[in-house]
Image 1 (cartoon, one colour):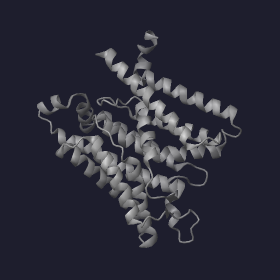
Image 2 (cartoon, rainbow, N blue to C red):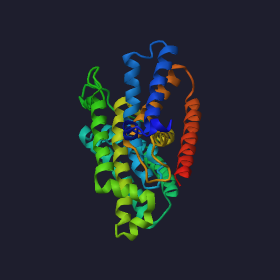
Image 3 (cartoon, rainbow, N blue to C red):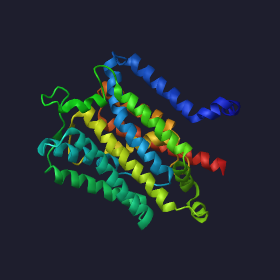
Image 4 (cartoon, one colour):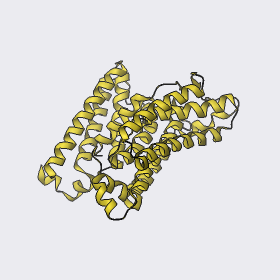
Length: 325
């Protein structure tokens, strides 16, 4: 086993990520055998629809966790963005492009709010994110008067459904290309820029970074700002795939996004993050969600499985750190 881990190709790709990818292929093979029609194009498109918005949530929170922080508000904030932007579109007649930009701006503002409280005020990330989660739920409900919001369908006579082309054009998953471009950009930011290096260093040893003369508050806040903007984008892909948004929801997606990060090799202690690993983790969660639905199991079953996954991979991360130390 150690010889395999020391192989240059394996070290470059990451042993854990290779194992996770093999698990993904195995899951897909098993579901395809036991569930009739699971390998159909409709099922694949359904998996991808879930992957897009969950992927942006997970990529965003990867930056936060890399600093040693956490954000449990991403799911409710995504719903808040979709509710407020959609209500503005439907009730006040705002152009679609304005509503889409509004979604990103709202997420960006939440990211600034979280980042400022954590980095400059010194409030623990757990407390900030829990408070923001409730603020997002309440704000979305108040803004829409506790009503659900439905975004225009693709065949809407007004032509306002054009934004759905961001997810799918005919049978072509254009959203996959957009998501892939975003992954490449975020990979470069995390691994090949000063911002990414400082964000990772904050998670490894924040005090050492501060003593070296780096403005740790600025870079710590940046991680939350990036996360917030990506949550706003996630909201666009959510409504592009699922249409209706209800107030007061979104908590489930926090756990799924964080589970995707942890499975992909991002350490909950900070200092270690993998954009590629997060993407594989998102695919595993999306495939699991689709498989559970196809087997007619309840959402609660997926929540149980996701919780177990988080515990197992966090334990593996802690054990690995102990061995390295």
